View 1 (cartoon, rainbow, N blue to C red):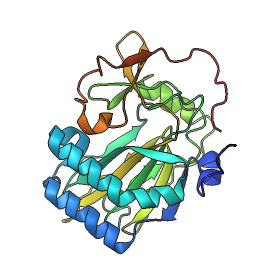
View 2: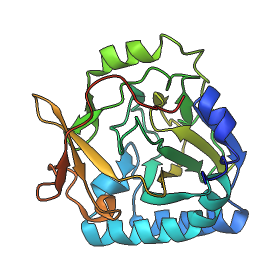
View 3: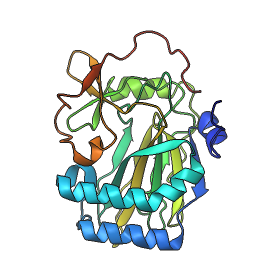
View 4: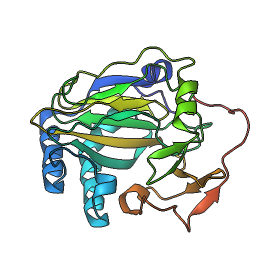
Length: 264
């Protein structure tokens, strides 16, 4: 028997994202303690725990974020499991913006849909670099997006991929206005961006990646010739060197041809 649809499923299918009240005040406080312990968020800098911290610190961040956010994820997306958990901190007076981009695929998107949960730990909006998404931009996204350069650049090239996404997309959401602990759940195919944080306060957030139970975690690597999918264990993002291909793990060739049953 197929699992029942998640509470956010309808919005994810149509719009590619959903906004919900998720983390309670005590959970936000606990997550802020994780951010403080990480020492991320220097003035003028954007920091990602998966790239900025050593393996021991990353493992601790993953464990604590999973413990705290797990109950929220179980309500919003039952029958899913957490495969990544990271901190994203824009320090005070950070001019840098993250332009429109697509993240690399983390499973076979012809068969399964992966979900990201983005949770700000302070109030966010247009003034401090909140998340922005492209309504329905997930519908035409390439399904085999391979990363390189520490998994932050993807192939197909962004200009071409984003052009495809805009074919059926609506308008950009604008910087989402959210309270601390609100949850933006978005299809992993969704184009997204965030603006600068010129304020005198850090803008901490967590990002949690979810896969359906039974879906393999596949890291897609672009090697200048093709995209190769590597099947990796669920702790990959907590312990791996993200600057290198996951050599030694099982290789899968991405399926070539039209999607079999890609989620709408």
